[in-house]
Image (cartoon, rainbow, N blue to C red):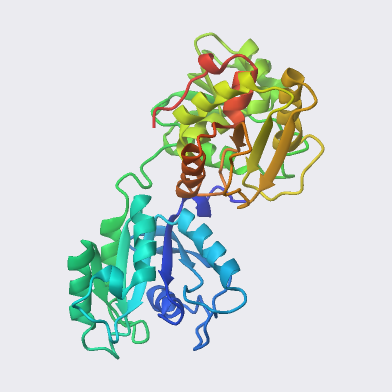
Length: 410
């Protein structure tokens, strides 16, 4: 659980390192970070599961470096490794593709010389993910510089010649990555423009069986920290103390943010002039696509006992008796549709490639993953024309107040 002074991995710039086996991916990460982050060996498939390394890198700021399994691996675990690499690609904000240039014929096209690398390059371009090409082992290949220029001409992307072994070119790589950072990265606010300095905000945070003992859940922590950074006046209460807290205030709070489970109660007891939203609805915009989620919520009205839905939670916690995704939302839906409604549940990074059997997907807030990965799930649903929404939007719709809550315009 992240504390107030930590930067959760989900908020960090994710830099994925991709390339063939023994192209020097692990060596590059070790040179780039000046640490022994990844195991280096002359054995194909040394990196199996992706290695995620969180650290502060000046001038990039908080980052997650992802060392992926090399493609071209012919071992028995090849397919599984590639699945993990594909998952890492979905989380990647900037892709670094490492190549070795020995024996490359400049007369051919980039796609002919580097067919697999070109496939990954096409994958990232389709998803609007910035790409940096690195020609590694320049200490062994004197044509590496010329090759980098040729790749830049062929692809229109930045390409640099480096030597991971001798730590040559690392400063140039940092500068290139800074230029490739998405302009909006780190500029988004969970609460958007809903509040500003000196506004009062009331947070309604039930401390029930699902709340970790002695801690707050991550969306509450991140929202609270942002409001403090905005110089707002923040009051935190449990649901049963809502009315008492409102009586103590000289004027109604500008904004009330509640746990989605308490939407109905808070709406009935809030001052008319106070805006209302939930942590999950805020994260629907911060991590996902809120307009798409709100449109997807309309599919709830068409559900029947014969319908099938998928609930996707990012956490891998042990489910509790009144779990919101596994128990409460299915119960609310079955109350409307009947007990025959089929509900499948996945957690963590388990998310089906084929969604065609579902009438609706309900995604959690997504606080454990970065926005790039949540958007990849949304893109998959859109491409298969499956409606998708999230926990908070679902509960607001079922409570009949979706059109009455305040949303962020991201």
